[in-house]
Amino acid sequence: MHNDAVMALIILPTLSFFFGWVVWTFVDGRRRWLTVRARTEFYNRMMDKFSSAREFIDFSQTEGGLRFLETFSTERVGPMDRILGSVQKGAILSIVGLGFLFLGWRYRFDEDVLTIIGTVLLALGVGFLVSAGISYRLSKEWGLISGVESGRRGELVSRP
Image 1 (tube, rainbow, N blue to C red):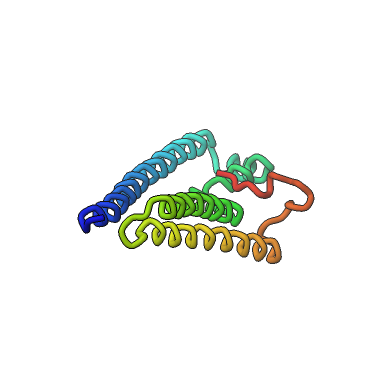
Image 2 (tube, rainbow, N blue to C red):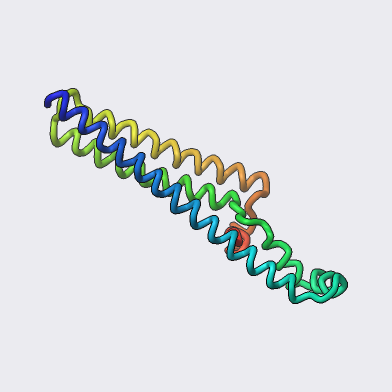
């Protein structure tokens, strides 16, 4: 394989990942901004419904009022969300890495470029999976996640 082909094999995926990351960052930022704006409008309308501070205090002391006040944070990411994100990243990177390894073993390119890329991606994927396992175990020991043994799903899922 010529140097131009090797460069294309390295540069094209890198540029694709970069542009994908830029688009994802823009879309995610826009989604967050729209969510914050919608919540702000909702909270403003809710606050306008109270004619006095006493009404608001009475409302805030009810169970529904407490849940309403808990929703003021823009986003809560709990340990299970992060662990599941690591599992997803690890699974995807491992599968892509195995695909590159297969291609590297099946088609011999110049200096085994596909095998090297596959090995790096597989190592990253396995690293994410090991990290998720360690995080899960530590979170469970530290009491950051509860209800796993009793099957109470509600405590594992973070509320928006």
